[in-house]
Image (cartoon, rainbow, N blue to C red):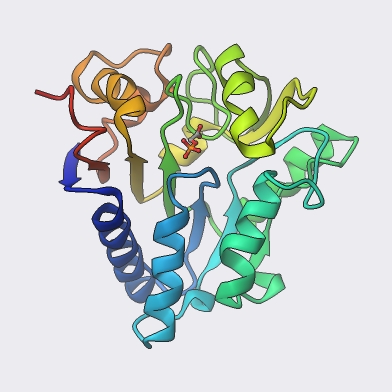
Length: 241
Ligand code: PGA
């Protein structure tokens, strides 16, 4: 796994945006799976700036949502849908027919999983994925112990994920399950970016990059991908030695 460490989060985001834009320029029509969460948002803003400068056409590729909290939708601030549409898809002007996002309000999770799987199948698989590393090492909602499932899954959320969720919603919501693309499906992508920033991620980054791969640290299961890059700021890289 290639590791790129930048001095701070701003420089890290700039580098992630530049490298994502380079992939998009080379791969028109590709299917991208971009994580919500706090970590990538500045990189998405930078991508929109690159587009405004004429350096990339963000509408030249397709998008699939990585995950969603079951039971909430775009009307809930902090949902993956709200974060991605307000933070990226809408300001980037991506046409609606280029995006398929999870609908956490669908009361038939099996149908919802199938809808996402069908879109991935229609586009011939995911080409590029950008994944944040969660405090427990999850990628999407592939919680510790989930392994490398292909297709999509409905997961009972880990205690850590439920605790961390307060930062997105500003309060604790009674959410028990998440819907997600499986880590094995994500691993089939041609290119994988893993990202983490801040000292609070230093320990899980060390476990991801320096310990033997383990199902207890889902991000570590991605590290033997043939084209994976871990983007860090110095604080997140602190325990790498
Ligand atoms: P974060 O989320 O970018 O908000 O830290 C990462 C995750 O838990 O998936």
